[in-house]
Length: 245
Image (cartoon, rainbow, N blue to C red; front, side, top):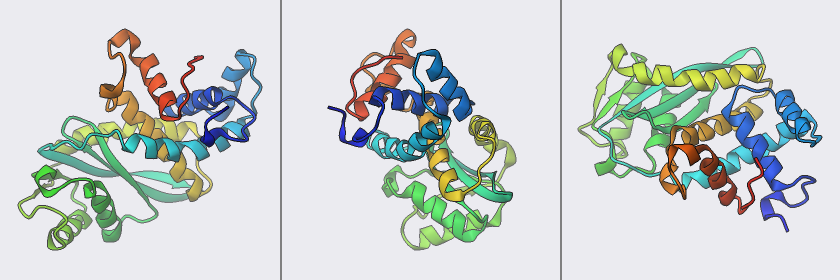
């Protein structure tokens, strides 16, 4: 019997999880993924794969969140990048630590003080004061200064935190945008914001997995087994043990 998340689905859970991994990790269109399944003798329309990804990407994000380590790292980098939705610019706020690990993301129709505040509050939520960074590297957008000051005043951010606005210090996160933007370009563009956000959540979640942020949970972590073990780890999160690809 398939796990509850896959109840009433007409395809095996392993096939759905293949599509989740393939589409969320590589710059493929839904049609490309449909063709890959066809090569394996499985006929799935691209619109079905689209619905699977929109449904299961947020579920995967929620499941993996329980396995993300809350580490004390001395500095974070915060930045935002542009995403077009139906001809209008939206803003994807992203945070990484000094090692390049993704901390969290936030999707907003506006680039303003409120968005910066909500983003930073979201990133800080799992961290106690002693685990929060001593330094926040940002661009020169004034909204970050407002967000930092407000969160300090509210007691949600350590009072001795320093904000640095030196462009070269944010090179790592600016480079880190590129793989996500590449996946977004491959979608052919978003038409609806409420569909864009689940898709981006899937991209960001699988990016974390492929960065190795959950490798400590793998049963075998040798390089030659790592890709397969990451796939097996996702399957176990959904109580699916069989690996077919």
